[in-house]
Length: 457
Image (cartoon, rainbow, N blue to C red; front, side):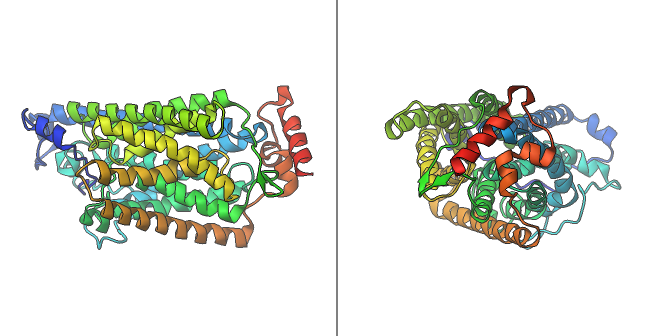
């Protein structure tokens, strides 16, 4: 199975690469692993493969970032529940993607709509040379390919966790998250990275503004529409701020995510090419920085305050925004992409509040709305794709994910329910579902409970 996820570069970068000898090598057939190890290509293959593994480790660290961001932006009485969900999603995501998702997403030759590549990781032990040499993917072994992609798969479901935090039944979320990773994410992903119909039309999403973050945002939107807002969020038609219990904890999470994003985008080069990887690092960094500054300024103008949570979401907005075109958008335009994303995320969070859609951590705005912007930005700021094709891809992937999520979460709601009782929610999910509080020495559970009770009455 050959990798089909594209890793194009900007025209300027392409011109520069034409002036130096290429470091990549064509897929070759080797009689044995011993022959491959003795070849001139082996050292380059080892370096490329090692970078993919390091990038996978960086994306793995992002899951700690997601857990701390979600926990920090949530009430203290739900912290253990947040952590539990994030542990579950990462572990289940890896195993589910290994059993089902990987072969659905990268099935080889298929009809372009639903790939059926079998079950498991798909290692052909009768032909190990083909799976662990350039004959597989030029830059990595099948194992490296799988573990890198599995980290992405778990990310999509983790985004949903932030949207539904504070009032969702743990069992309902666990079932939904597993189904999302097993079926919806790999099927829509196969349309582009698996060589499907959108890839054939020229749709471009380098590292997943839509394919990963947009999927999580669309799924989260469907879930909160069925779930309803937290108690006390909307009173007499007005939106009430329910502050998270630890902005410092959320800050740690955002910086962990930013750090891991260098692997998320840099690893998507799918090689250790020094020019391409360093180029992607720069566009990733400057877009995040511009997103934060733009969100700070926008919040100051609209909300009349210096809002740290908006600044943190601005960082993430810039990162999501550049993810689709980190390799084809120039550093200067990456600043523009990030700055626009920073403005968008503030406006989007306010918009969802006005629509009475409760997203406690702003995940739909960060990942969904800014994912749409980042995908369209490829058409605006690079020759990699047209705006029309990008828009078609966004509609197809968002629409499919939303319909899948609404149907599946709706079915779970009808069969077993998706929301905890009012008593459980007021008490906090830590005590109600886990039997222990995250901060027992600081009486945070009791104060949060009393606050929620007062606000609801």
